[in-house]
Image 1 (cartoon, rainbow, N blue to C red):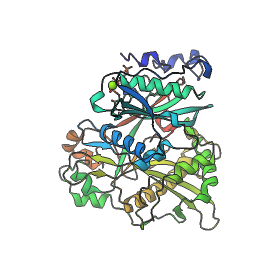
Image 2: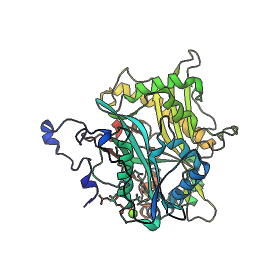
Image 3: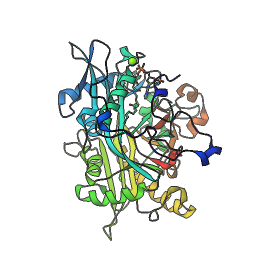
Image 4: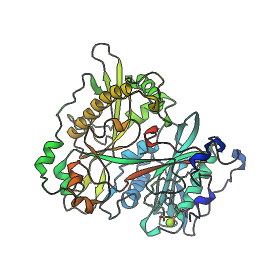
Length: 446
Ligand code: YNC
Ligand code: MG
C-alpha cells in the first residue's frame, strides 16, 4: 500500500483525537536541511525519455503543454468530460510573480521530442493557523494515457521536490481527487445551473420525473444586470485596497494563501483578463479571471471584492456541444466582518450580516457569468461559501449520474450532477498539522 507515499514526509496516519495533548506541535516533518545537501543531478527517467523544462513564455511550448493536458488530464469516470485548460489559463496559473521556470517540468520522448508528461510548481506563501511559510503549489501532474501505471508519477514528484528544495523551499501544497496519505482537509464541489437546456442536453443535469426544461429555466432564471449599487469591474487602481481587504478577510480561515505582495493580487485578479475588447457583458477574448468590487456610491469606499475564473470542460460524447463553459468561484472579501475575526468565532449576528452581503455578491457573480455565456458556476464548500450555496441554488456534486436520473428528489433539490471531482482533498508536504475543517480552509486550487 502506497509504496511511494509511505516513503515521503507527509502525515501517514490520522492521530486519534483523544491523544491531542501528546501530539507533536505543528511544523515540518523532516529535520531541517540545507540547499547544499540537495542532489544536483536530475532523477533518472526510464530510457528513451528526457527532462524538458517548459518555457511558458514560448507559445509553442505552452501549446504543447495545453495539448498534453487537453488529451490526458482529469476526466470523469466514463470519460464524458475532461478539464479543458486553455493556453491563456496556463500562462496565468503558471506565471505568478516570482515563478520559477525550472519548476515547469516536462518529459519528452528522446528523438521525436513528443511531450508525454508534465508537473508544475509555483511559489506561494501559505498560512496554517499560527504559522506561515514559503511553499510550492504543485499542480497539473499528468502522464500520457499510454504511460499510466508505470510508476512515472513518483519520479515526476521527486524531481519537482528536488527543484523546489534547490530554492530552499521545503514545503508544498496540492489538491487531488484521489485519497493518498493524508488529506488535511476535504471539500465538496457544488454546482449552480445557469443554462438548464444545455446542461440537460449534455447529460450534466438529470431531468427527473415530473420535471420539465421550462420549469428548470424558471427556477434558475436571473436578472440581466447586477443588482448591488456600486458593483463594477476591478481596476488597476483598486489593487492596494483589494489587497488590504483580502488579507484581512483571509485571517478568518485556518489555512490560507497569503497574498504577501500587491503584485500577487494584481496577477491573480487582473492579469488573466484577456486582451481583446469587451463585448457588452461577454468578457474579453481569452479572459480567464473575472474580478469585481463594490464601491459605496456615497463614500467611494471599496466594501467588497468578488472573483471567479473560467475553466471550460471538454464535452467528449456529444454530437454538437463541445465545451461546457464553467465558472469557478475564486477569492472574495468583504468588510462585513468584525476586525481580526475568525470564522469559528462569528456570532449568529455576524454570520447573518455576512450572509446577506455574500448572497448579494454571489448573485451578482451569477448574473454576470450568465450574461457572459457561462453554463454552470462551481464552488467548493470552503471559506464562507456555506452562507450562500443553498440560497443561490447550488447543488452538491454527486457523481452518480445514473442513479440521479431515477431520483426525483435530486432534481427537486436542484442538484446538478458532478464533474468527476466530487471532493477535493487538500494536502501539505512536509508539514504536520491537525486536520482542518473544510470551511476553515481558504486556499483555492486552480
Ligand atoms: C496524484 N494525483 O498513489 P503510491 S492532481 C499524488 N497525486 O503512489 P504511477 C498520486 N500522487 O500510492 P499513474 C496521484 N495520482 O503507490 C497517483 N499518485 O504510494 C501516486 N491522470 O504512480 C499513487 N492528474 O505513475 C501511487 O500512476 C503512484 O500512471 C503511482 O500516474 C498518475 O496535479 C497520474 O488526475 C496522476 O495523468 C500522472 O494518472 C495519471 O496513474 C494522470 O504508476 C490524469 O502515484 C490527470 C490527473 C492529477 C491532478 C495534481 C496534484 C499533484 C500533487 C503531487 C504531489 C506533490 C507533492 C509535493 C512535491 C513538492 C515537495 C516540496 C517541497
Ligand atoms: Mg506511470
